[in-house]
Length: 173
Image (cartoon, one colour):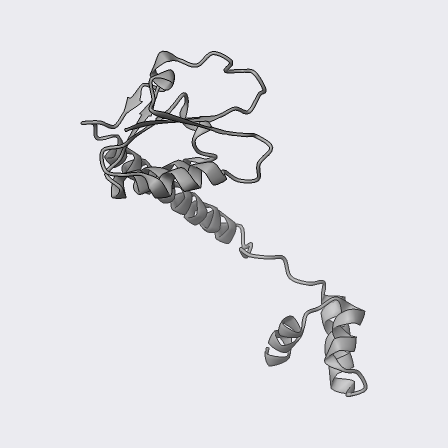
């Protein structure tokens, strides 16, 4: 069964739908004022093997590359296909799902390599990665307050802005 899914971002942008969309047995239109995509979620749960999900463009289906990959994995598990009219994507007899998986791995590797490169560059400049340390004066004040035994941990954290965990970490050093 062919199931059309429409989600418009600009009111009236797609007043006339392509014939491929109009030839679907069912057409579901998601309103842009609805939080999330509840109709799409419901549609994905009800898909049967052999069904074809028809969209005008991929961006009307997914909010990000990661979201598109999740949807395509769901379609593949259900043995359903995807047809994106304006993007010329038709997974019936196509290896689009495999290509998308490769893109997902590629994306993950790129992020990992950029992170490693950034950490290496920071290390070369004698900079530590991670969150900036608290100013020394606050740390020293917190340690002094703790060692005086006149203040509770809650008082120290409020006064200095240093969390209990951070205080204990500095005390162990």
